[in-house]
Image 1 (cartoon, rainbow, N blue to C red):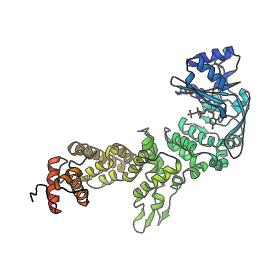
Image 2 (image 1 turned 90 degrees about the horizontal axis):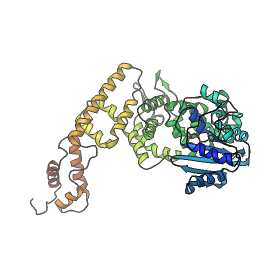
Image 3 (image 1 turned 30 degrees about the horizontal axis):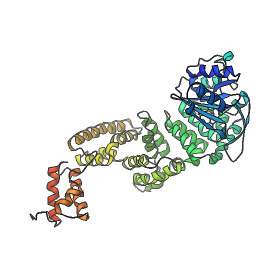
Image 4 (image 1 turned 45 degrees about the vertical axis):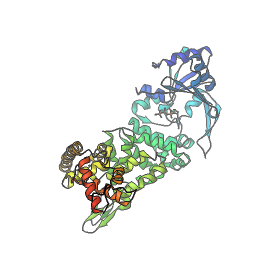
Length: 472
Ligand code: CTP
């Protein structure tokens, strides 16, 4: 079968390898994505010979000498060619040690190289030599698996996964990303080999986990991670959310299922990875705050505060970025009940103003998260909440226009307070600043200089401060 190759780089490589009589193929993810008509910027080239030499000659011929990076330890080289990253490798026969994912490598044939790949859909190769240009080599019927949407290992799955345990996460990631099913034996082998994930670095695990979070329906991946037992090993706080407790015939909802519903719903609206992480984390403290109160039922009092406190630890352990990204997720976890509380009570201006002040520029993301958080089976209830949410949105717009508290800057700052009363930095400066902020948020004064100045003078007098030039 001949596959049309779409990129201008292939005829150039073809010319070179044919001249040197080097059997050469494009292989792996690029071939899979080409057949699925998915865009791909990473090209893997396998050559029966030296990948490093081939990368260097190609760089020379195309005038891109400085664009080659050689990885001697792995016997590979990468060439940056416009917006493409082309990786060159000599065909290999590999065996793995049980305590490492780093293989020991010997030269091999194309068949050897295909044998050692992770899935049948990733083991297809297309010839780049002139006499067979475009011909598909597909020893494990990857094309059928692609058509039938199946993830299957080329060898016995126990061998493939135990050779490189990251592949267990990759199987689940491809299932979620492409909407494929993992073949039964492959799936069972993930459960048997799950413990081997412990030899994989956190960085590699989080890369795959983030790809699952970015999938069109991330729940597909998380259910697979949970059912195979991997989730409990890599992210136990999340796996702990599973289950329902019953007391006096009262049950609470399964927070794992609920969270995944929220995550899927949110993912229909946004690709923002960190907003999706906020959905994953929003109820993370429910298992530790759960209490049964007689005559009342199940409560998860304070789970938003405890959850926000858990965010840094989880992020650190999973090797997710700390700093502003983590703070953003933490803020959304902390505030995730506020818009709902607003619609349950009366939507007062001051409550809206406070929410805007605390959420700042993340208010729209917070509203999106909260809307996704409404997962009741009762249609009437959902309609009511969504209607009320429109009301909150409208109020948010009105208040923002009037009071501009989203990125609150005090109209009177500490400098002016100190100058006016001729004092240094002290407790009174903080008291006055806070009085002004509170008055604005409560709607007692407007967010403008004149009114804030007036209040500053009033409060200063009350605190026994003297105005410079001694008017009092
Ligand atoms: N591969 C493998 N085992 C791994 C990682 C990769 O066998 N643990 C092989 C597969 O043949 C894969 C190719 O190396 O197709 C390239 O790997 P990579 O670039 O990491 O993944 P892609 O399959 O290209 O997918 P994506 O670009 O979405 O990560």
